[in-house]
Amino acid sequence: MDPTMIIVSALAAAGGAGAAYWLMSGRTRALVAQYDAETASQAALAVLEGQRHREELQSVQASTDLAAQREIARAREGVRAEEEAQAQRTGQEQKRLSRRAEELERHAVRAERRDEELVRREKTLGDKQRAAAARESELDVLREDAVLAIERASGLSREEAQKRLFSEVEERSKAAIARKVLALEESARERAEVTAKNIISMAIQRYAGEYTCERTVSVVNLPSEEIKGRIIGREGRNIRALEAATGVDFIIDDTPQCIVISAFNPIRREVARRTLETLLEDGRIHPSRVESVVRKTESEFHKIIRAAGQEAADEAGISGIHPEILKLLGALKYRTSYGQNQWQHAIEVAFLCGTMAAELGLDIKRAKRAGLLHDIGKVLDQTAEGSHALIGAEFARKHGEQKVIVNAIASHHEEVPQETIYACLAQAADAISGARPGARRQMMQSYNQRLTDLERISNSFPGVERSYAVQAGREVRVIVENGRVTDEEAVVMSHEIAQKIETEMAYPGQIKVTVIRETRIVNYAR
Figure 1 (cartoon, rainbow, N blue to C red):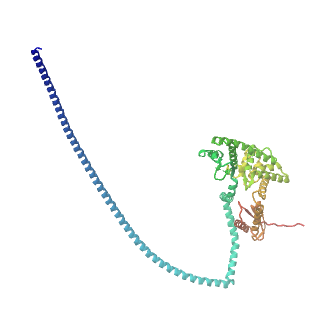
Figure 2: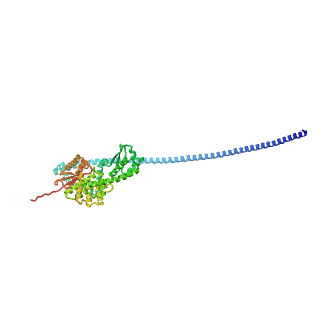
Figure 3: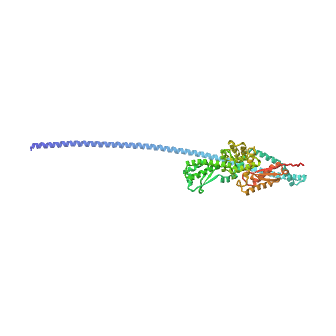
């Protein structure tokens, strides 16, 4: 190879290497310079960040110091206010204690004055008592001297004078007492409504126990104890539906295999009993079923009642009675009075009226009709105001009964005047039926004993000629001697007999005492 070319090549290579080195050295310096600039910038940023952190810390510290100072100021203010309030309360308490001490001191002064006054009064009272005792001793001496003087003047001893004086006062007082009794009776008549309510309340109290236990409940036997749960239903909805639909109370307690139905209305109670028995036979017990069964049972029961009324009319031989009256007559089968079934009582009164009418030559059927219908108002007396006699008479009048029958129904307890003989027959037959021994749950022995006691008490009074217990022991009639008992004394005697009966006898209701004094003048023409 040419040496020149070799030299040229070497120089070219050396120049290229130098150029390359120069280029590399410049870039390196630039990189180094760039690095140094970035490092300086980061250092500057770090310095600035540190300065900012220090400023923030200083600001936070300043805020914290300010808040702390404020809190300390508030605490000091609260402590100062509490101290002032406590000081105020202490001052008030001290004032109250001071006032209390002053009051106690004043009370002590007043108590001391009262003690002194009481001592003075006791001393004065003692002086007066001693003076009164001395005066009483003087009066006793004077009184004894006066009595001795009176005894010498009259020629009577003290005991004899007392007896004569008491006898004269008693004789003079009898007439005044009788007049007072008559005035009191007149005042009692003016307060008849109040007196009647008291009598009714007394009768209810004496008879309510037996009546409530025996005449206001019905018992339904169950096949098993499990059926009680089905009758009650979920959350009691079945039993509530039964009570709402029938209007009675269903008592479900621990009594085994039975349910008690309680109500004063016997017809509702009977409908409820039949409804429950139907539901038990059917097995489907739910509210909608209960309502349908109750409606069906009521419809069937009304037919049964009407049939019972028709049966009573047929048995008495009476026709042409209005269907609504027949329903009331049949409903009497489920009513009692003093234990006597009123349906049977109505039939019995009808036969008694017919028998008496036949003996008197009167219309037998009219008499029977009056007797049969006389108590129909007892079915309505729970829904209407007034006595059963007046209610029944008004119902009969509205449904076409004759005036004679209406008056007999209304007057069989003498609440209105009796206008015909048939009214008297109905009243008499009613009393006879109720007075029959055994008709109203009275044993023969107790019945006879009651009559005997009434006559014994009446005969124990002086001046009584004879006495008779009538109306099944609900009335006693006392006949007195005309010459020994005056009219005024008869008034007093009736009250004394009634008081002695109340004291010595126990009986339901009331007993009427009638004292009879009459004057009979008999002459014979020959």
